[in-house]
Image (cartoon, rainbow, N blue to C red; front, top):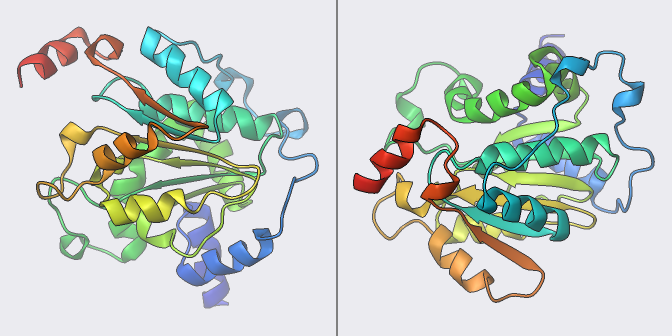
Length: 255
């Protein structure tokens, strides 16, 4: 009983262990198109107050939204406050609700300001929670905390660190890789090759804000190489696309 309760708790938190990921991958490997998909019309728990129309607030955001709509793989590079993550997650929710994909998979590296997981208190799930919190926040803004928890419990939304993505093939999914500037070249290559049939992947990050040692971040190099590849979009946002407090753009201009 204790073992089943633990597994259920992990599903509810959206952090799955490697064995659960592998079992899910075997179920999804030969999947082509999921009939029906998730539909908000059949969701009694859907709070209409959280249904928001996504509108771009800058030319860069317009370009990013169009790129996501027309490409299976999109890389969004730009400074903090340009809406990279929010737009990517909003597009993921839209795709799930429209039945275009069967699930959402969100991932980000467990690296932040040079800190180590080993120094944080608690079990592995507790250690990972602070790193995944920004993804929960963006999803909550679009879905509400109650509905997000339900969708994660049903397996329609997964949130996991980069280390849990190895060995998977993500078919019929909308995949968002956040804070990719904290991934090495090898990690980004591994993540990009997870893309499966009938899936969309958006990779976001700011090469200027990496927490890795100099020259270890692979985002800038990967973006430069893929920019010339057909059917792959690389969108570069700038200070003019920042939609946070005006001081953010001013500070980034001098710091």
